[in-house]
Image 1 (cartoon, rainbow, N blue to C red):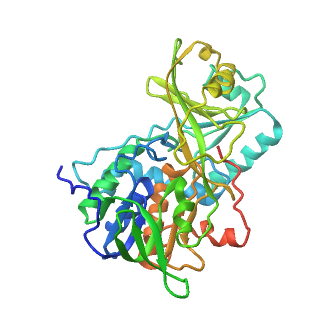
Image 2 (cartoon, rainbow, N blue to C red):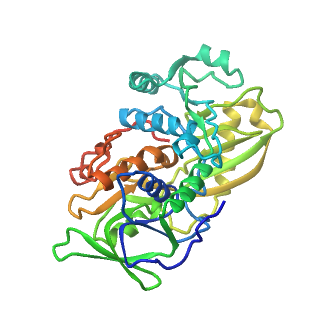
Image 3 (cartoon, helix red, strand yellow):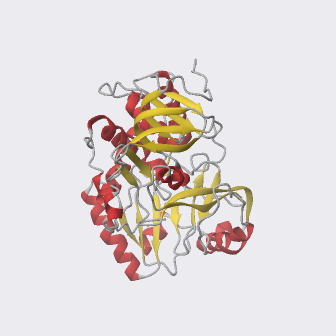
Amino acid sequence: MKTTPVIPTPRQSHYDVVIVGGAMYGSSVSWFLSNNPDFTGSVLVVERDNMYTACSTTHTNSCMRQQFSTELNVKISQFAAEFVKNFRQHLGGDDRVPDILLQSYGYMYLADNEPFADVLRANQKIQQACGAGTKIMSREDIERDYPFYKTDDIVAGSHNLVDEGYFDGATVFDWWRRSARENGVEYIENEVVSMSKNDNGTRVTSVTLKSGETIGCDTVVNASGPRAILTSRMAGIEIPVEPRKRYTYIFDAEQPLDRDLPLTIDPSGVHVRTDGRYYLAGCTPDIDPAVDYDDYEQDHSLWEEKAWPAIANRIPQFEAIKLTNSWAGHYAFNVFDQNAIVGKHNEVENFVFVNGFSGHGFQQSPALGRGTAEIITYGEFRSLDLSLFSYDRIVNNTPIIESAVI
């Protein structure tokens, strides 16, 4: 495949759209823009690290679920499932594009008390109304279908085997980026270090690169992941997004399970799922502050003291396991309400957000990339109304209440 080489300096002095950040979201937005026949402008994507070694995209676990408590979040994931399952078709039927398997072993939320079980039941009604396949399972149902769980403290579970599980998000990202570049999107390995606005502060007029060039622009897209606030502050905008560290562990089991393990959310907060012939687990640290943008140091005590004990307690076959790999990555954590921020700023009218996914980024990238491209092209959302995620809710202090946040 012939690709355009990534260069450090832009070819033009002005672009219709400058996207700050070229990982999953920068590439999603650029692909949807460049694939839309109604958009005829120029696009520059500025990415700090063309190897993507220290970004959320590289450290993702590529999970997908419809088990949310907000109708919009359910619909966003349903589009993602359709997009992934028909990936080659969405990319024009290109024979070079691989088919992508959505491994639908589902999520399994386990409730150890009736109040949480009632939350799962209420959420299931919302999901069912959207057409999701979520089912509430009794303890007996769980023991029948997944006999390896220890269930003496479990009162109910919520499970969905339809379009929920794991997909190869890295391939989606790679082909979005490749295809966008073939469509004329320009990627450069550089860094935006400042922005200039017009006299009344209502528009960004240019961005300045670390290499010294000043580039005029009609629209700026903040696709900077955990670094979102660093980008927004260049335009004088505060955004409640910060890097929070999350830990992933890959392990082998001496006695593997005889069936796929759903992504199980234990009442302890630890989650674990099938990962090929291995298993993947993760958890949030008990003390969860913002971290430095370059802090990927692991906390090995978290595995020994929290993750492994919870896993072995819930699945006794996992008492004998061997840790084979682990890493730390960053959530672009929206401290306001842990939901995405998408669309235009309320005052700086050409500054566009696609930020704050709080761990839901990969599964939401098809719908939110498409929606962001629509805002830029048409000035409105057309395929799916994402206005619930607007920046206005932060200004008005009206958070989205999403109970299903992991």
